[in-house]
Image 1: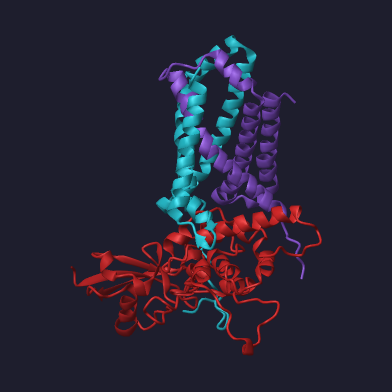
Image 2: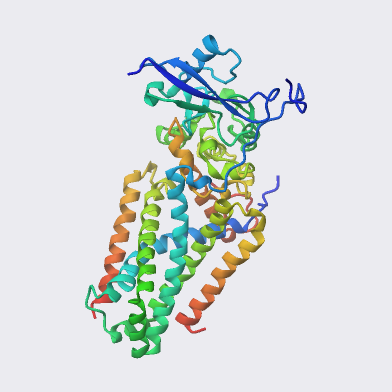
Length: 251
Length: 119
Length: 137
């Protein structure tokens, strides 16, 4: 195992350049180092001007997503020695505008996340005195997978549809909508349907499936989207069969 | 709170695409194997003309075939439309593409109806 | 040396354009495009089937010329390619069916492997039934 590895890190400093470039850094490569450790070494010892996001360094905050050798990865969960002898290329997350170096603009995703109402929506809240909402393990199992999303946006980087059309609502937003749609405590499916049933909602997805492949938490957003297409279609069929007066069908 | 959707046609198109995908996946491989490869290459003793004609005479056969043809054509239309959008990035030509794809599927369905059901 | 277009509080974001050949970048993308292109061969086979039916309706001579045409090298090549693409379509379709279809028996989810298995089983049964129906006479 070589003791050092070369990292080719993308730089973009809008005050001095109009396009991205690469800068090479040689960093130590112990067996237990992840790409993030390499970047921290660069920042601490070699070049303090490098900008990048990170936080928990253990794969739960979703901050450190970057392209490592062309694949979207959590840099805190990707071992540097896997790329030995290197060089290993580190670039900002694809399909997002680059603010500086490895930092991307994510407010587009934030807007879309809010638009799908990722919270329990109820017609009437139960008063605290009446106790908790009860849920069986089977009911939890329905949506648990989709609740594992850490908003890291690796799926948006892997999704070619999002890259081609930034108006597409994207895998994570739909998976999170499903997390609430399938939650037995939630009554907001109809609200979310409005946002999701637009052309830039679920119908833009062509089931490439790469989002599921790159998801570090095994959320399977592709599955969530296809399931929702089926649900939305059945809902549409039922709207012809059920009497017009009904605003939404019962659970 | 408006419940009107922006593109009410999308669920129908997706339903046709899905049904067409399932129908073509289930039925076509065996048919291509038989009529595209085995028969012309003489791998098997060919079915007699009378037998084929008898099968085709059954209205059920023709109805099922018509259904498969129609659904498969709409499956192609939907998938090919998105391939053009995403592969060639020609979304600005979407009116032309939609006309070509779904219009083509309609024309094909009418042809299938003419050949199979005689209308 | 400061870039003259640099605005201190609103720096210009870099937005790389997506190449027309984005789908050549990764093997999963190539596989995806091939899967989508298989729909062309699905449509082709519909046409072929309609010509076949027309030939059967047209009489024994028409049928013989159709069979002869189907053996033509160009037609055969097209159909060989179509066969591979249509099988590819079927395989990729059944592979993703468990992701798209989540069924319940009572309150319990049907395991994904059962969904997949039922699709392949149905495929086998339908194909066998078709071949038996067509070849028994």
